[in-house]
Image (cartoon, rainbow, N blue to C red; front, side):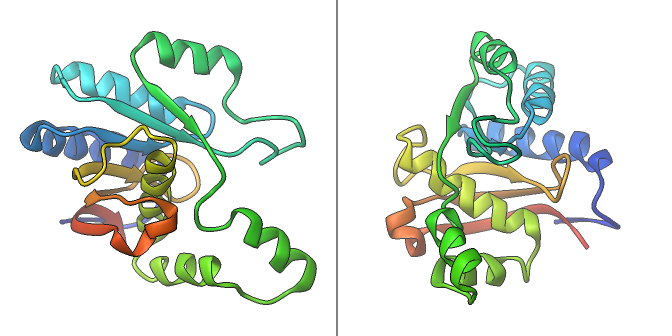
Length: 185
């Protein structure tokens, strides 16, 4: 496992290199987080460098994340990613979603947010990997019971990559993290 000294968008390129190398070795798909699409475009470039044959599944932020009625991934970038063969998933965040509205209104901590905070003990990126794996499964874009290389990050860029078998959000505890390839300290 590679441990980065700090969180930084500079970790994106080496994280993608490790992730696509492992995905090629395992002959599996890559699932990654992206907000504006820049991480997904970087993933396409990394995949092309090694002639990666698996699928790239990009999981985006939900609508209304920044502003009501808006999504950080523009329609133009969504179309460009599709033209490059990237499957794009936009779904409710598996580890917050409706619970966030309850905790914001009534205060307190609820089960899904407790799971998220527990995963953050490892790193924000590990939490993101589990969450986007579930989101890709819920959308029918990841294959049930099949390991994938899942990539997340802290803030901007990608800094965490895991080999995991994701599960549906309704069966989140069936998720299995097999290996953490890299993460920040």
